[in-house]
Image (cartoon, rainbow, N blue to C red; front, side):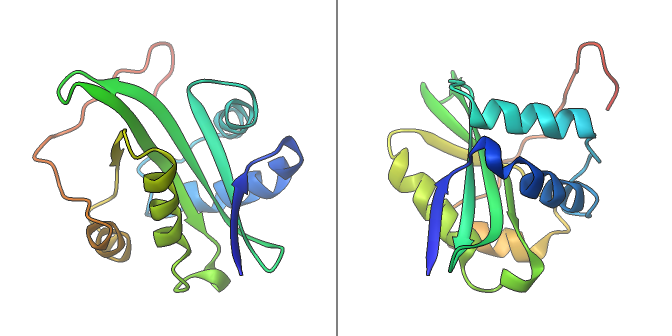
Length: 150
């Protein structure tokens, strides 16, 4: 049975291990770093108003994690939830866990606009997101990161 629960500081080592694999995969544009991963986990397990982390458990075994971030869209005039990370360990894939997390976010934050990024080559993720009623936007994303290189 799948349980989605808030990430806790005691989950840090398990999440770090999963993040290393996720960010080294073709599903993510950047490779990240230990510092970034630890900052992400700290933000997601604190009382931060900006980010929240979740653990996916199947029969009390950690199957993956998800991270979301909050903001406001002036284009749409409403709060936004960015679904930043969705990672399911390989031996748990194909069980609908990522889809269940998307449904969970919809249920927890129904008044928010939901956005995410996906690599165009990640066809399984694209199919799952489209099935969950996400659609592509015609934007090219740009970034400036003060103080560090990507």
